[in-house]
View 1 (cartoon, rainbow, N blue to C red):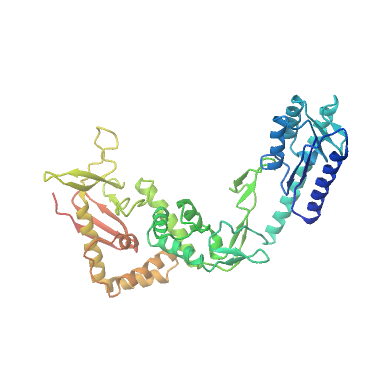
View 2: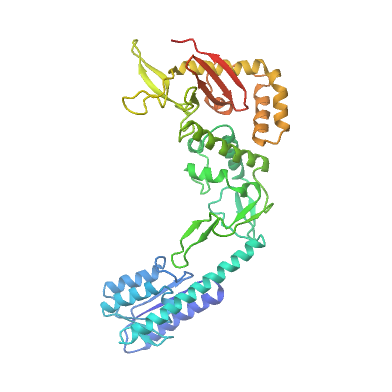
Length: 444
């Protein structure tokens, strides 16, 4: 005979009950001459609504299947399982193996003829008890949310730790990494590009390792906790048995707490990032592409060259010239979208021409800086935070700036929105501050 014990919390009184169960059944079986002691299996501090995470329970079932156990004794159905389906499935499986379960509290032996009928009724009651407990816990959590009280784990939360009371406090070593992520994004880099930069520079993530995920960076960029606020109940438990959680899309009420803790990111900068996320989303939709400068290290103009005829993005192609080397040219993505059928008839453009147009336009902007100053200052005073941020940056970038003589990809990402290519050879360079400068492509 083996014994199975379980308590479902880590509270002191429950752990005492756990120890008492282990001692009781060990002595009970050892002192009874009818039984040979096959061991005590005990799970501590684990929920009983399913058996997937109960290591000792699963080890006991494996030993039953291996023929090491003939009988199991446990305190009650609720200690064995609060899930009717799990309970009955294991009882029937063990019964087929000739193994009985004695539930002391209910006085049930599953090898008796009446055992399964009583077990079905009582295990259903145990499951309903578990549902009631879950609902009461959920009710308590939501009442705390209403009062603006919450606790969250910071194990996977870069930038914050918990103090003695469970409140969020800034992690001084990690906070600069968070600030850099926000700054790099506003400087035109994509989450995927930031990921590769951090891995190359061996910037530590939340776990101290140097592996980053673009999805993690995207999530960080929209997390309101970095500006000191807290949106509570972003997700919720759908089913108390499976513990499955899902994102809250408005099915249940959420609670927003302002100034919940010290901010890492200034609210104005956080809002600028949200506006930039929206801007990039609109840009992709408007120009018919699903990627925004995914690998600018090797393809700096990706998604930034726009057709003046159909407004879709250009794609880079490799052509072999008569002189025997590859030419990098840009062509409208709609031109041969259907194989063998001519689509958009806008002209192609050499990549060298695009580089020259960007450099020429930027140098013209720097040379005529004073002509743009009044507009930049108005933008800084306006209600559009992102426009004001861009204006401030452009004043900074053009202050005593030397003319650009070669392409600097990271600087281009900070300044260029797109270049529009027209059929007549005109190139319209559009900067992120809204400035537009026209250049003429004379190549044939």
